[in-house]
Length: 115
Length: 116
Image 1 (spheres, each protein chain N blue to C red):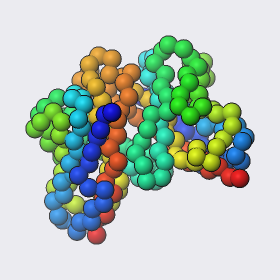
Image 2 (cartoon, each protein chain N blue to C red; image 1 turned 90 degrees about the horizontal axis):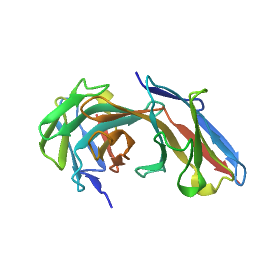
Image 3 (cartoon, helix red, strand yellow; image 1 turned 180 degrees about the vertical axis):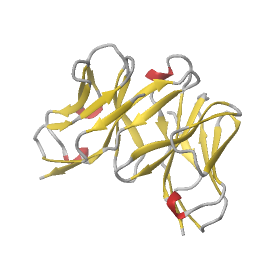
C-alpha cells in the first residue's frame, strides 16, 4: 500500500527565512510524488512532481523538493519565505491500480508566514 | 487551461435529503475523482471513474454513490444525507493511460456541504 506522512501539521516561519515542510512516503515500488498547495478559499494547485527523473525537483514560486530513496523522504523547501506562501501544503503519492492512477494525500501542513 | 467546475460552492441540506453534486471537466480526461476534505485528515478518495459508466470505490465510499453517463461529467450522490457528511467536496480529473501516474490532477474549486 502507498501512504505519505507529513511530519508537521503546522509550521510557522518569518518572512525571508527558509521553509522546510517534511514528508515521508511508503510505497511498494518506485513512486510518483507530488506537492500540492491550497491557498485559503482557492482550489488545489500543483507545486511540483517527482517522476523518477532528477531527484531534485524544482517547482513554481521558488519551491523545490528532493527525493531521497534511502530515507523515503520528499521534503519541500524554499530558501526565503514570502507572505504569499501562507497556505496549506499536501504531500501526495500516486499509484496505478490497473484501471486508473489514484492519489493518496498526506494530512497537510499549514504554513504560517509572519513579518 | 484545464477547467474543472463544480455545480455549487456552498450547499445546505437537511438530514435524510438526497443530494447531488455535479462536476464537469472540459479537457476530455478519462479519469475523474471525488474527494472529501476535512481538517486534519487531508483529502480522502470517495469514488473514481476511469471511463464512462465505469467506477471504482475509493477509501471511504460508504453513504455515497456516483454516476458517469458522459465523459465530461461525474456526479456524486448522497442517497440520504447525514450530519457526518458535512464537509468540503472536491472533484478532480486527470488524463488517463499507462503513464497517468505521472500526470497532474486538476481540481475544481470545491463544494462546501452542510447537512443540518
